[in-house]
Length: 233
Image (cartoon, rainbow, N blue to C red; front, side, top):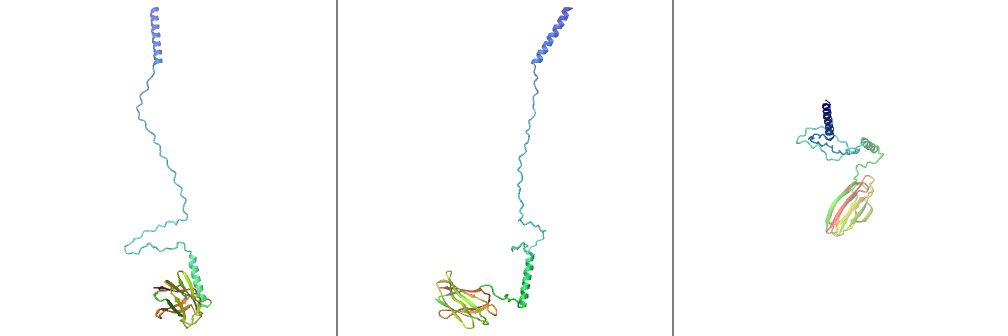
């Protein structure tokens, strides 16, 4: 009986030692991971929007309603420059000034100058082989004290031929010695006559007495000129 118990105890002891030794040397093998690795998407960097300062001087865009344009209609686009910043008060002011001026003229408190010619008058080009010219001038209207100045210009150099020349019913002669090329003559009104603007008549003769040109100026304001161009050939 003792031998049987001893045999059973030895079996338990051997079995326990075997389990302890196996458990201390055994290591579990982890399962093989076969899943597909995914790459996380990284968002692209976004640049901040540019900050643009508003243009306070830019004219706001005006949108017009569409119209039915037909062939033959006038072009709605105008190329004429207009002033978009017209002051309405300017128009009223100009009308008031004109009204006041008319009132002063009608009441003989101011001279009427609307009839005066304020622009220079060009009598054109005369070609001649003559060495000299004779200009004869006089007042063709009422004798009211008109004065003129005659100047010849050559190579941008001016020479006064007559100054404070008084115009009456008699002819006053102005002689011009022509130089090669262009010769410019200016008859300038030095004043306005007592009865109106500066008026005068002229006759241009060559050295042989041939009449080349005749005409007149009428109601010139002070400083306005009659201009002539002589070309000596």
